[in-house]
Amino acid sequence: MNWDSAMQAPQDEVGEDTGANLETAIGVLQRLRDVVRNQVIGRDDVIELVIIALIADGHVLLEDFPGSGKTTLAKALGEAIGDDRDFEHFIAPFRRIQFTPDLLPSDVTGVPVFDSASNAFHFRHGPIFAHVVLADEINRTSPKVQAAMLEAMGEKQVTVDNVTYPLDELFFVIATQNPLDLVGTYPLPVPQLDRFLFKISMEHIDRKSELEVLETWQSRRDTTGGGSAVTRDELLNSRAAIDREVAIADVVKSTLVDISRNLRDDERVLQGNSTRSLVLMLPALQVAAALRGRNFVSAEDIELLLPRVLGHRIELAPGVADLNRILHDNMREPMERLAGSTLA
Image: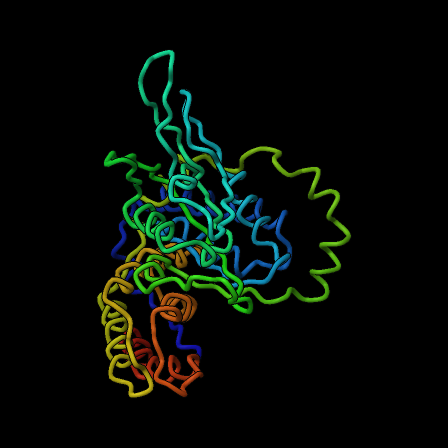
């Protein structure tokens, strides 16, 4: 499918003074993308989607196999983000949590610790207090731990002993699961799956990229942790600028609703996507447009993101397996109307 057309009309709606702020935001995103690409080779499409989710205030679920570079990706992203606040802070740039069946919620969120000197309890922050959290093999832990993650991802807070502790405004989870190894796992419930903006399947990289990984592994290892490319405040300011200055035309919103209604009415679909998924998709579409140097959302952005947003939210009827075909069939007419409306 390629319905991208000259959607130039909404561009004038943004205003004359948006160029500087939006241009600065695009530069911040490009710097972040470049530094992560230096560490993660052959994954440009995954890097772009991860950055889109980060700026859109979403989370990502990676279906992968061991040794595919997920830890390198998450660590490179976390270490590229610096925190320029000048006071002592307990938020780490990056933390990795290895999920196991015996993990407890307090191992993730933190726990009150008694201090004999002050004769009082003090909260010891867990590894979830970080800008970028790698939740490795999240489907291997108990539902109780998954529920603790659900609160953190949905509300940006954790509750321990009836006390609520806020997470940082820049809080991003990259969770992984191995789709081939299902022994001893706890499948993620639908509410937790819905907390992930994207579900991304990572395939093997191509031969050229794999050779480059082998040839450059020493230099990339030696430069790891060499300094941040962007700051926390720059990312938050970029998020605000993109939200404010990238226009979403009404016809784009109508297209998303029509596609969703088509999917819900399709007899091959047992359960369609929620309205919340469309709301979550809007800021992601804005970031995708900004990364392409536009201040308006186009059909190209919908084509890129809609399968990633809806793929894990749609339950197919028994015996039906071709999700891509179903998406194509239900997107065709709304996308054609979108293209026609912009040409009128």
